[in-house]
Length: 390
Ligand SMILES: Cc1cc2nc3c(=O)[nH]c(=O)nc-3n(C[C@H](O)[C@H](O)[C@H](O)COP(=O)(O)O)c2cc1C
Image (cartoon, protein in one colour):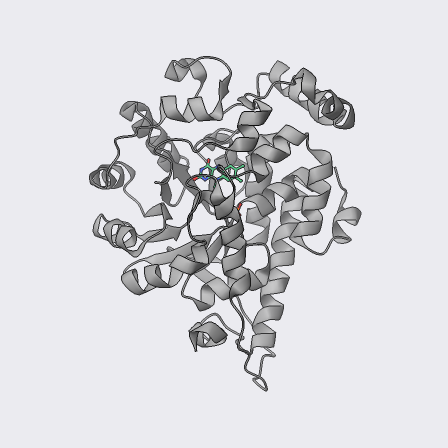
């Protein structure tokens, strides 16, 4: 694990990724990094952000700057949110607990995946910071209802319903690696076993202690599924493929608080989300892990913003690796950006301190970009800050 001194010497998400890559077994890194089929959508996410270019205003007084904002009424220090990442315990034993503590320390929101390796109660009790809960709708509606009620009782502030996983995509890397949950060392990973002996020792220890690297919010017996499963089979056995927009009203009534629809990629779906009662629309293609061949999220963002402006908050994720990416998305009308893989790299590199380093680097980059753009406040950041939109 990289100590604080080592972490202070890295100056970008990509450098933290380099540390993470060295610390994780190949199959685990592939699980985190990989996308569906030919990984075209992953590439489009980065390209769409990189293709946007700034139009700076010079000689503006930028001596006082702020990136504070509110998300669904909750004040945050920066427009960055930790996206839900299932099985974050694969990256670090403290997984989602460490991520939530880092977010809390940095004054931002963390979103817990319903497929987390720590239970929602453990994560809720581990820090005082604001948290959202992400939901997959399972075939077993009673179980779905119970999880929503547990999340409400535990104090989660918003329910993020992920709508882009009716079935699991085919992730080539996981299929090739024979990635199963909970993970199991395989003979063909013998090289990994030697290189990452510490990681495998941790796997054995956590399985012995009963806190395995599976999904903590439900157990296999709970759902009547077989022991070790490929992600593909697990999702296809558990998730309800018949969910429609009509179910959002049911979710809202069970939850009773703000609902965010995560996985919107068209203005039509953004409209349906708002008409179904959503309080926020999360533009996402699951970080390129679901349908391959989609646009980059920054390409579809302006259409979504135009459709629901003033009726719902709009967020974006997918390929956000620099503070300047956040600034670009905000210029196009997003209220915040979510990050997935970047903070998982932080977890793998240094646990809570690693996630804090990622957040602090991105916050600094946002601050510098705002100053250089001549837009010292989030209110002053609009589409005039980008050349392609002038
Ligand atoms: C390893 C991994 C696991 C994920 N698990 C979930 C999940 O359980 N639920 C969900 O809604 N999204 C999940 N996502 C998608 C993220 O919430 C987010 O949409 C995506 O990571 C954003 O792209 P980025 O990784 O390029 O930042 C996962 C992403 C990764 C990388």
